[in-house]
Image (cartoon, rainbow, N blue to C red; front, side, top):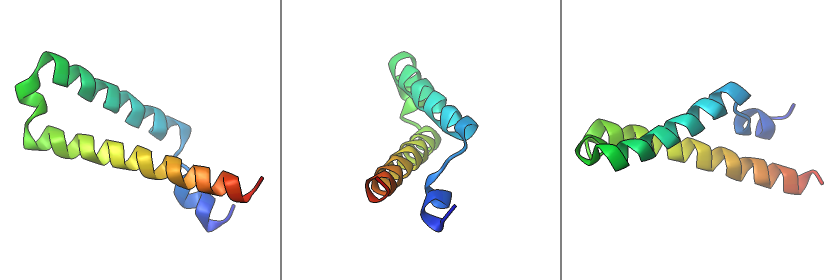
Length: 67
């Protein structure tokens, strides 16, 4: 496994956890908008979204190179 795949790969469990958290943030926004607007919730949501976005980009780039 080279460096690109190593940094791009999340374990299946970690990816599932992050996707679950993203769904929980959406529920929090719908049911408790004031809590969702808190600094801690915004920071956590930003981290989850950024992590999922960057890993999917790296995966796409890697798969394009190795077709």
